Image (cartoon, rainbow, N blue to C red; front, side):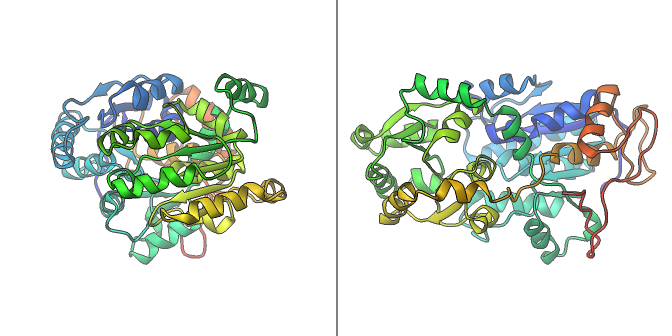
Length: 419
């Protein structure tokens, strides 16, 4: 276990669109105790800038030379720059999210600097080492001091790997509150769809961006062809990687049978997803969002680290091939599908994960800059954070008071936080 530092801030490290979306509320809840560091793994406006602006966040520190660099260069530059930040101005703790290059590099930099590491969305496993994300999440898991697991299945994965129960917090997934807080009203969603000439309930929304699908020209061509056979217009926001792959593989003609649109911000995507008849994606986040929106999803991947969405009945895992079209047409034609999905609870928590994670981080922080060595207490950063955490955790929190650790200890000793 890393030692707690004499520090007045908790570092929250992001570098990609999903990290910004999922950690925005954590940053807000930390208040003056939090400091946002942006690696610029995604530096372009459509994958980073618009999401920071929408979340109302301003990065206090950004790194250089990361975006667009080869993977090994990204790691070297992020570890070097973050390591220097953590050495010269040690944070009380570092928060990382998920399985990105940014998360893995920040975890290593924190470990080398002796700074406690909190891993958000800990314990996800695909058991597919061909996925770079699987290597990243396993690396972070080895280094983390606190594992904020989103589901009981993630807890079980961590326990099976020998992680002590005392280091695991069952928090839920921050995507629930991120989705609910960003989701436009029904009328606003209809207006957004109308701007794109999309008839609610009569189109498919698809996103493709993972290297396993975009780097293989035959695989990508099959996916695009199967999307065109679904019998409904297919809106396809063009992720930069997909746009580049289509040009590189000379598949531009395959887009003629689809409705490619510019990449959209999170609010627009949720509006379109809410009104779509079917979702098709290789995204990890969409596998979570579909359970909040109660929409059916076809996941085009070799494997998934989110079995909860599949087991609940929202998502269906298929590889590129005729099953995309066959299953898609079957789901579209099912008249009772919406009614069934509406009755299924979201498996990713109650929408208060951000508060629980912020509370974990504040256990390492002290408002006077002294190391907090009194154990896992919860100390709000300021009055605003105290009010927000009170709402999230359902307890009274007053600045200057130490609060007992929330939640109950389950049979295995894992903190369950009343999910």
